[in-house]
Image (cartoon, rainbow over all chains, first blue to last red; front, top):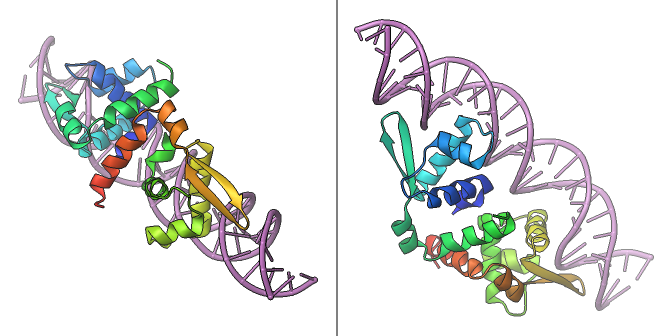
Amino acid sequence: MHALSDPVRLSIVAELRKCEEGLNCVETTSRLKCTMPKSTCSQHYRILRESGIIHSERRGVELTSKVRRKELDSRFPGLLDSILKAWKREHGE
Amino acid sequence: MHALSDPVRLSIVAELRKCEEGLNCVETTSRLKCTMPKSTCSQHYRILRESGIIHSERRGVELTSKVRRKELDSRFPGLLDSILKAWKREHGE
DNA sequence: TTCTATTGTTCGGTATTTGTGAACTAAGGA
DNA sequence: TCCTTAGTTCACAAATACCGAACAATAGAA
């Protein structure tokens, strides 16, 4: 759960949930309109991956990540929705 | 949100929810069976208080804290339940 | 193949955050 | 008043996160 405690990771997950086809690091930082070094972005993705929140696979030169919706909903019903709803309410959008 | 990202604070909230009449710092650490210095416990309580998750009031020499259920549920419907459920599942109990 | 461009990871140093003990405040009772 | 218990504040230590540089992996062009 610690994975979802960071505001940057929450915003990444929020973006990923909008994109059925997944996102890579570069595209993510561009959508978040933040100047985050790729090393930092990579670390956030690693944490999300290791905690089972996202799944990544290589497509040529890039690594595309998606939220693991089904697995998350069965392990922690309603959790992601609640956290993201609360987060969005506090951060506008 | 950051207030509920720490495992110790989550366990404090979990204990508080069991106690209708509230808890103080000393009683909390004793129930959690952890050797946490009072300064650390005080900091965790301060964060929970400042983020509006708990409310504290003095009763003689001690400070009794309770979860602000109604306020939380109206601000973040379902959030606390979901987080605590997930947390309990991952930490036994 | 070799060169180049793009994406992402790893590593080491630095900066930020968190935890802790000591000193202090607050309150009640002897 | 003095003593005890509960909690806070503060300054420093420990742990964690961030970031740039070097590296690895892949693809396409020369």
